[in-house]
Length: 263
Ligand code: DGL
Image 1 (cartoon, rainbow, N blue to C red):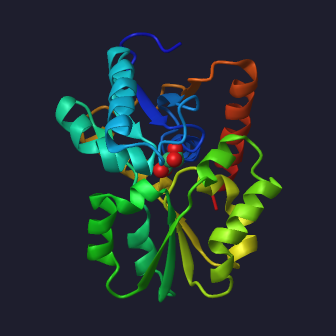
Image 2 (cartoon, rainbow, N blue to C red):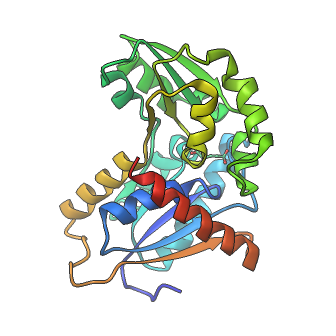
């Protein structure tokens, strides 16, 4: 348990996907204390209504803030699109950082004629992504790929599973060899990078984890909230499925995410 008032960074997602953002945060901010909450009991958020995702996000944020979070990272594209403005207005005194599909870096890369954006249906439908596409998509052909069911399969904990491969074949197979890059617009998807490349081809994959981690550093620095370099970093993993098996799964997937954070 984090002690009251120690000023940890609270990080949350609908489930295991946020671990890919946490891996980047730990890399970028090695002296911080992180408390991660994955709402695996209620995942996926991508199929829920706006009101449900908002209510779930507010409940998690409020418990992290009550416990002493000095900053919040919404490590979920769906929850960011839905809840970031509300959480920023409810907690004006602490940095609230979100993630967004990494369309900007994909459009600035040398090869960007055709960009596939994989995300939940909710993320693609909501105004935040539509604004991102209006701003950065003009010089490219941006293909939206709503990956219904994919986060749910990743939650089951086997990134190499044949079921994931089958779904990817259906959703991405038609684009094999025809895309210049792929944006991983859901924080679960970096956990299955290898399978995505096997289906779509050996193209650059862009995700928002690294950008969110850098933004968290900037926001903590600006607010004078960075942990001193004398502090040992730490991480506590929590899931709304509170079983030893689930905790093992979180630890295993965090290790996988940390390997991927450098790629
Ligand atoms: N990991 C989440 C995201 O980045 C959502 C997955 C889900 O729960 O549908 O959008």
